[in-house]
Length: 228
Ligand code: DX5
Ligand code: ZN
Image (cartoon, rainbow, N blue to C red; front, side):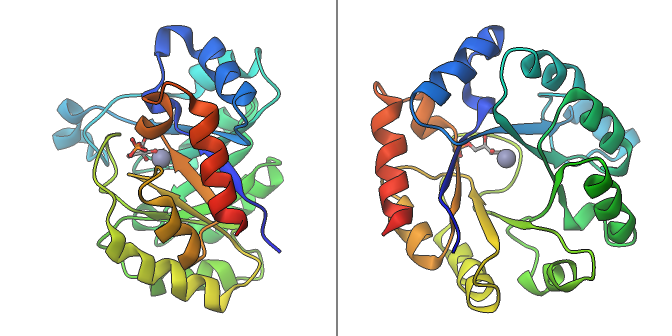
């Protein structure tokens, strides 16, 4: 069976205190730390970057790795994820989830390189991307081991959960009973039951966890929902 993984999104943390924020989440019962890797809008016209924001890169992962042994669940919102496999491996990333929209031609090579780097390969899809696009990656000889269904448009924390995306989660869960299915965007106490009953087992949550007076309560509530 699939195990619940609760993954606070460090995008909502105090970046100036990343190591202590990470430790605070682990002490509150987090299984994974979700790390959003993306770029700035002002470059996007010339370099065709993927989303309008600038966050975490390999140097930040490397610094954080010196302070924790935790599983670092890296979500790559970049146009050429292949360029980041080696830097993130060296930095100490644990999971490497790329977007199917950015990797239509080279995903077999990408998955192979992620695996040979000792990381867990995952594929993510934006709300507008049909779920069928990830089936070949799950069914490949060298498959991805996690599918991340975006439940908001990638780019920012604090957006509203899109319940329509649960159709994708249900289809995936029916087809692949033991696959890790991750949801990301707008997850918290009011949306977790919808996601859990659709079949998601890896839960990313930023603002609902970091904004709570007691993150441990939110994390344990979400874990119970996935376990049921
Ligand atoms: C959005 C990121 C998410 C984000 C989630 O592009 O992929 O990980 O931090 O934040 P919340 O939980 O606040 O929607
Ligand atoms: Zn994310």
